[in-house]
Amino acid sequence: MRVRHLSPTCIRPRTTGTMPNSTTISVRCPFCGTLNHIDIGRAADRPQCGECNKPVLLDRPLKVAQDDFDRTVLQASAPVLVDFYADWCAPCKMVAPFVDELANEFLGKLLVVKVDTDSAPDVAMKYEIRSIPTLIIFNEGAEVDRSLGLEPERVRGLIQGLLA
Ligand SMILES: [Zn+2]
View 1: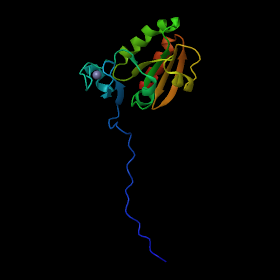
View 2 (view 1 turned 180 degrees about the vertical axis):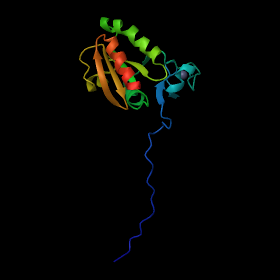
View 3 (view 1 turned 90 degrees about the horizontal axis):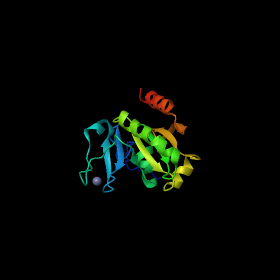
């Protein structure tokens, strides 16, 4: 019987890809389209895009395209509030100022994004968005809770509970 020599191997440590920092988020620059990795804890310092140097403002909702949803929302190392909306939706316009308010209020702790359900049909289908506006809170890649229509106190309470 031949002795089988096993060549040495290394087990690669499990990593989370390009996110060594526990509060890193990946957001696309709305000006030049470059994907930036940002420490959300320093969002108030007005981080700049690494490519075009324009500020990446997170004190207001950031629009996320379908192709970026997994990377920006599901892989974020911070809770994310997603506003599923459409341009033609009147109730969405009533919820928008509240969503703006949350982005400002929880700056540095919560990423607030908007997804246009018309241009992100796969994401809308995956999360079974049947009426808009729908707000979904994600944490560590999973849905924590959702809110239909305008429920400011409930949504604020959910976020505060998550960040506590
Ligand atoms: Zn840029």
